[in-house]
Length: 139
Ligand code: CMP
Image (cartoon, rainbow, N blue to C red):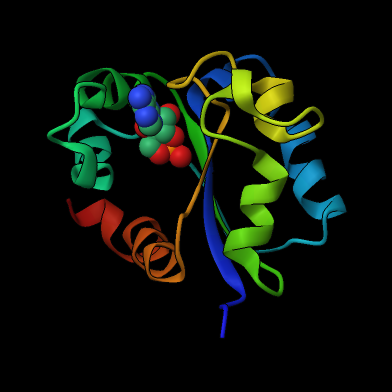
């Protein structure tokens, strides 16, 4: 059975352009309830740990530099079938390929600066939420 929680981050570019409130409103209007939320400026080290699964990829350096370039909002969200429903709301990873009206289509600038992160599976949501809400200040 699909789980009812997912994890998200509003990325530095969307924070810097003043769209955090618009994006949170889209999440709430789509029926997601906020379970936990924090505003944090990640260190490069913390961003590297969060995205460790991508450490061998060519985009890892750019991604971790960007994700530590300014504050982000991290949140745990609740809704039935949360992971899949949230991925529909945010659209494809590349904003240029995201459906019109999705968060990334509206507020993403590039594949790196794609406005928001959304977990890709229930197990990832659990791990990513735990990273931000119980481990972050110890790494
Ligand atoms: P996110 O959902 O945060 O998960 C991994 C991130 O890597 C992704 O969004 C993108 O911002 C970033 N990224 C950069 N380049 C690529 C790429 N070529 N393919 C997938 N993700 C990429």
